[in-house]
Amino acid sequence: MRTQPDTVARPEAQAQPVIEMRDISITFGAVRALDGVSVRLFPGEVHALMGENGAGKSTLIKALTGVYTIDAGTVLVGGEQHEFHSPAASQAAGISTVYQEVNLVPNLTVAENMLLGREPRRFGSINVREMNRRARRTLLHLGIDIDPRTVLDEHPIAVQQLVAIARAVDVEAKVLILDEPTSSLDADEVEKLFTVMRRLRDEGVAIVFVSHFLDQIYEIADRMTILRNGRLVEERMVADTTQLELVRLMIGRELEVLDRLDREAPHTESGSGTPLLKAVGLGRRNSLEATDLELFEGEVVGIAGLLGSGRTELARLLFGADTADSGELAVRSHRRKLRSPRHAIDRNIAFSSEDRKAEGVVGDLTVADNMLLALQASRGWLRPIPQATRTRLVKDYIEALDIRPADPHALMRHLSGGNQQKVLLARWLITEPEILILDEPTRGIDIGAKAQIQAKVAELAAQGLSVVFISAELEEVLRLSDRLVVMRDRRKIHEQTNDDVSVRDVLEIIAGEAREGETRA
Image 1 (cartoon, rainbow, N blue to C red):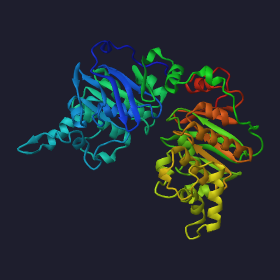
Image 2: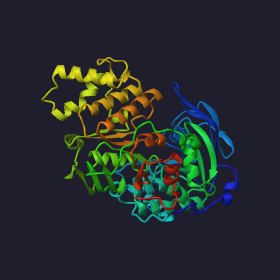
Image 3: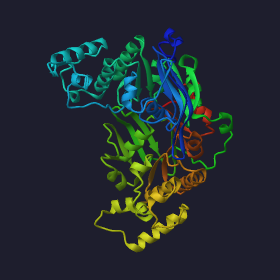
Image 4: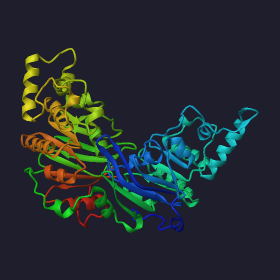
């Protein structure tokens, strides 16, 4: 593994910043998304924008590219103040962005996409021959060997991203923003992208690189800006920052304080008997490397790792929300092919997604309807739940989870985030699962609701329910889990019994600096 980038403190970095954002603040209603954030982009550098989910990275990018209006602060381009009220204004200043989802026209050719809106013309018509010639020249300059006459959709996503970069080069961008460009790429495709990035960097382009893969940051980036909760933490040279330091700055908690936290839940002995669930080599191309996992009855397995480490991808494969293309899954020693969530539910597996709004909450339905959705789906829509059963179940779980308001007829969208999360937990508990997969069940909720959900998970495990618990909050994972699995860069890198494991220990493992002799997966 590379521990420092291939270039450090490049001479160009001593020049005037090509872009400088000073004290940028943006507010959405009562939420302050950016609070006095400053960042400098130098020509001839790859600048990593680092931070966990919700840190403000995307908001900062959209402020620079004219998508969001800045409430306070200034943007300097070449030392002169600019205001970007639209993406077009930002592009005119030499700022181009390539997003994770390529924003091109798939049914047009490579050349047409590269020169869209800037096509060379002759006698009032598009000069196709000159357009193809110009596109080919730019592609070859970047080392991209494809025919510009081919339709874009014929190429894999990695090539489409390179075409998007080539388009930015054709408009002579001074700043190129790459927002999670490697999330769907394999190792060879990432290396091709990095080759192009290095070439552009050497030609003086300032590149903003956003990625959750730490190894990639340390391979390609020169400088980094670290954000947390909408605020600037620090600007650092990558070569001067260890991965452990970076993880600490991103997470932003005092390790000495966290190390003293007492675990509130009793832990069971792990690894005895036959596993209730066993995954062997479970994986999905460009999503998760082959992963082994065992879950025993009454056990809580905690999954730790930074955003993008593969936590959610593993959870979705275990539930059949995504289909694995390698490995196998056994439930109570019986091999199962989970082709859909319905198959998982039929095998007493429940899953609460991290995306509460998109995959959980139905805002215009009542609390009762939301709570009973999974049970009704498992019965089939032609077999409605008897009214007496509906009333009893909803009443029992409103009381058990202290859902407020305690009104089964209240619309779900009127509840707080914490109470919505309790309703979603109730939805799955009503199905009486044997295995419960919880992906970020306490994200974005107040501390009181968080404590109630944690206590309920511990209580359910003590009663024999098997739980896979995923959270970005390491102290929460350690408090609840009997066994700990650590993930990084879409693969499992470590597994051990949760016996006096500290937050510091986990951070060292994530950062790739685990102590010699520790067991690795």
